[in-house]
Length: 355
Image (cartoon, rainbow, N blue to C red; front, side):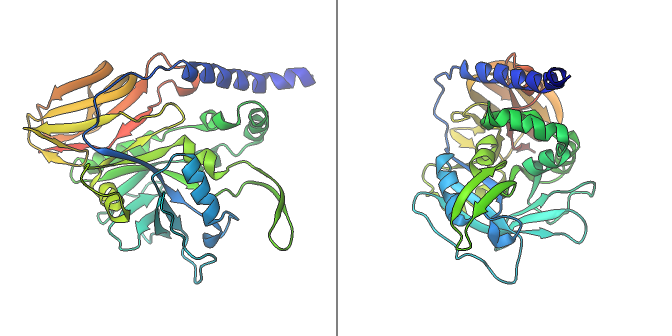
């Protein structure tokens, strides 16, 4: 009976092993240089300064560097006092903001100057008119939905086999969130982001009263969530990366989402070509503009207009002339994927708005 009870968990581990073997065989190809700087980072990060975590800013910085981040957007829950002094680092752009409840439902991730306001952790309310972006994916919501005894046992099996790939066992995209974004973006500019909702607050920690950790085993270390999904922002090569330039890119939609543990997206590009100029995602262009998209590995590109697929192309690089007005975005899928990532996008771009 004990052996029979292990079968579902052994099967899940075998699924993950198949995924690991598939990802190890992916061979990047040489692609043209993107016309923009590509900065990797994440949004929706918490520490002990916002409660329900014992994570610290030095731990966030260390994990962000290990994940090869260029920026980290920390969004604390507002408190009357701050537990930590804010830190700066010469190798990492640190952006400090807030996560707040909205009176009309849902929450909002925002910059301190209110220039970036991202609708987050919502159930059914319409997208508010005053926000600049929408969080279409959130790791925390996946974890909440998978908070079952089966998932915890499954996590334990993966902890001793493939700890860095466990998130693929609970990864689900909410199509309603994508549809809500597409519907709103048909009438106004609205950028999409993925939220790491990184807390590093699930696990067992043994520490002294002075704060020295003697032992810890974490379910959700910062590095694990940082590596799973990222938000890449695009800047012109002449622009110096900074807090302001990253926030401007997030506000305008010059960014894309990558489920980074599938593959490194460096080399991906989705841009418009108007004469001798290249315009990034978030730009407004006229009908007839040429759209360019490329991937560092052979992939399936789905070009969507107002949420509807208008073209599917397999390969590395393509150009398409726009024929109708509306927001155009791209989803990128790997070819012949194993079951765990079948039908799930590796990359989700923000729209280019054809007027």
